[in-house]
View 1 (spheres, rainbow, N blue to C red):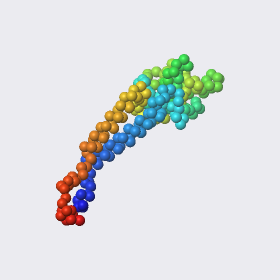
View 2: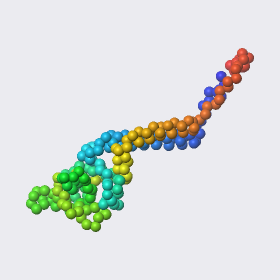
View 3: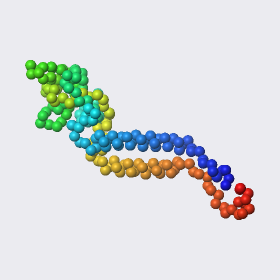
View 4: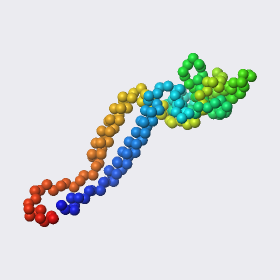
Amino acid sequence: MSEKANNVPEPSSGYKVFSFIKKLFIYLFAIGVIIAAVLFAADHSPQKSFFGYRYYTVLTPSMSPTYKTGDMVFVKLQNASDINVGDVITFNPSSSSDAYLTHRVTQKLENYEGSGVTCFKTKGDANDVEDAMLIDQDRVIGSVKFSIPKLGYIVRFVQLRWYFVAALVILLWIFFRLLNMYFAPKGDKQDITPQTPESAEKTK
């Protein structure tokens, strides 16, 4: 067999770029889906913590522009003694509700009125006045350490529309398979002409 038939054509630059983008997208998408599935999709309760953190979706613009609607904040569980003025905390404003607020501490009142309880005055960055209620230490979850913009929208979508996500994964797989077939380097066509004993002898 001739040496030319054994040569594999070099992938084109377009194929190399496509291959890199495909792998990067797949890895990032897979990581995102895994994180959402493990940490969020199966868990609708804001009480569950991971490595000492809880996650909450910002539902109102009261903390804009620091945290906007749809952002996801990650709250480190902390005692009242570790929270100071200026920290952004997440708390339950009412024992009769499962709602949570994330506002900034404007005052820290230790041993409030001789009760031995630490209380906090809070205020949303976008609000003109402080919150009317005084937050005692038992209602405080912790302080916000970081946030991811708009992740709350994605997580909520995954939780409520998981079947759409499954269909999207399948469609993306088909899409990349088709692109891979289009961009994949084509091998040299094989010579299918029947060989006579004389031609076969020449190729040896």
